Image (cartoon, rainbow, N blue to C red):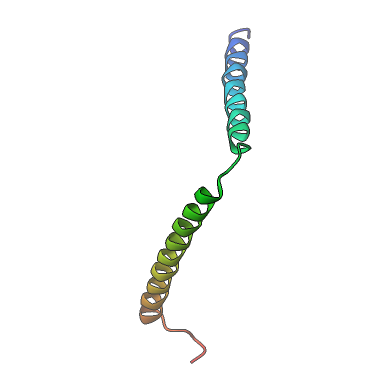
Length: 72
């Protein structure tokens, strides 16, 4: 009956470092951000969003060809 206990304590000690890592990540997020970085990031985000919208539209259109809407 004693053998499961050491395993449980090992699992708990493994989980603690992960929590510490998450806290460190939050601290790095609070660093000051330069406006130039935001603009560049914004452009990248807009480009990614446009690509996502286009690919989603293509998926929708191809799905409608296979399975036309029931309303019509």
